[in-house]
Length: 122
Image (cartoon, rainbow, N blue to C red; front, side, top):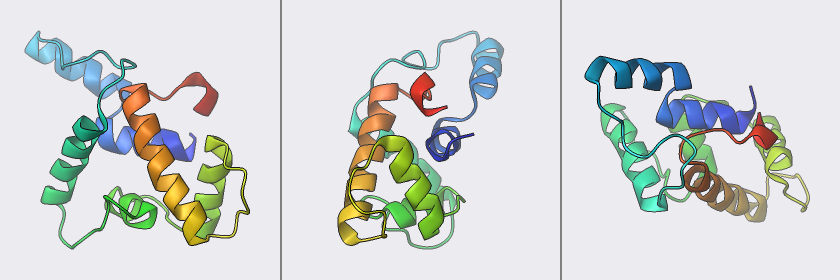
């Protein structure tokens, strides 16, 4: 699974879990997977995760903290892999520029994808 796919699963759950929950409640769970949502809606989902976890995370600004909050590898090699998946064209050196771009791109892709990993990022 791609790094972005792991981020999606950590925030939105797996497609199987969503289908089971929807079937159990006999109600739709909001927008269908793959329908765009707002960045604010993504932030609400992440904030719920942050509320349930001990510690302080600067996940609204830091890709490293966002990945740590989601119990994902936030090492430079993992961030390089994520940058390559998302099409970053700068140097893959862990610079502030790369990390800021990654955070912005991840949040935008999460909103655009509506909780579904695009085929291009699987």
